[in-house]
Every structure is written in structure tokens, then in C-alpha cells.
Amino acid sequence: MAKIVLHENWKLKTKFKFTLINPSREKQEKFIRRDMQKLVEQYQAFLRAFKRDTYVLPFEKIPQPALKQKLLNGKYSGKFMDLAFLPRKSSVYDLGI
Image (cartoon, rainbow, N blue to C red):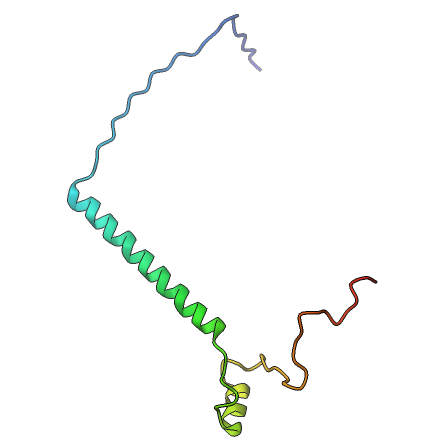
């Protein structure tokens, strides 16, 4: 293995030069339009997801057979809430144990 010995006060001198070339106005506008379109699409996707996740079935306005059908076969299957035993903010378990 070769041994590299650096002398006292050894320095590496380098020089860099770079130039930024701005793209043409048309390209800049194209990038801005594309970015704006992406932002609009992301915003619309967020709104759709928010509406989907926060939508509440109007239980009192839907006839019982239709409500049963929606709960068993719709996007709410597996998310049934027993109205006789509603969730509470307090825990069922004693956290002091």
C-alpha cells in the first residue's frame, strides 16, 4: 500500500466557473403551466379524499332497507357503528393500571 505524505501547509487549489443560462420565456411558461396543473390536480385529489373520508351517511333520512343495503354492500361495509353503543372520548380501559 502506498503511503501518502502531505507536507505542512499543503493546500489544494481549485477554480470553478459556471454560468446559468435561463431557458426561453416559452419554456419557463410551459414549466409554470405544468406546475400549476399539478397543483390543481393535487388540490382536487385532496378535496375528493377529504369528502370521501369525512362523509357521513344521513341515517335518519335513508329508509331502513336501503340503509342496510348500503352498510352491508357499499363502501361502508366493515365500518358499521352500533347506534346503541356509541363511541366515547374516554377509553374503555383504565389507563391508570
